[in-house]
Image 1 (cartoon, rainbow, N blue to C red):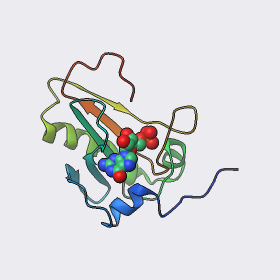
Image 2: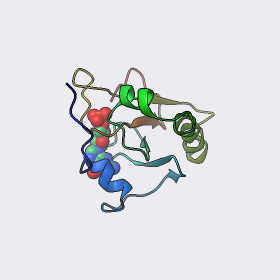
Image 3: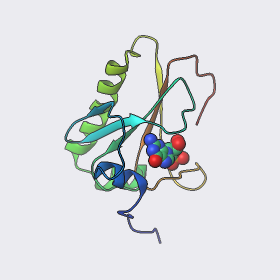
Length: 120
Ligand code: 5GP
């Protein structure tokens, strides 16, 4: 049995404004901010505003508008960062084997250098 969503996880606190972040992008569906421990020259986290634990939870429960919104947020972030031409990588870790640390669904966007096989 999976644990329920923890409303006190760090990204939920960031969404509530309890922990300040530099907002790279935000709209009604998503918020993007720099990762605190960057694994590439550009390392931004993109999170849905809704309370979803992981990719499975988001895919199963999020509305089509929320899913489309998060997808569009990737494009907005990449455009704002100026990396649509040079390229970027989007990664999501789900669950223990992937090393997911924060139990609020998030996408890592890596860019700004040749990424090789970097997987976070
Ligand atoms: P995961 O391993 O769950 O896919 O990734 C969690 C990411 O969140 C890590 O890359 C970690 O550096 C980042 N992170 C953890 N706590 C904070 C925080 O308080 N602020 C920011 N900006 N990033 C965080």
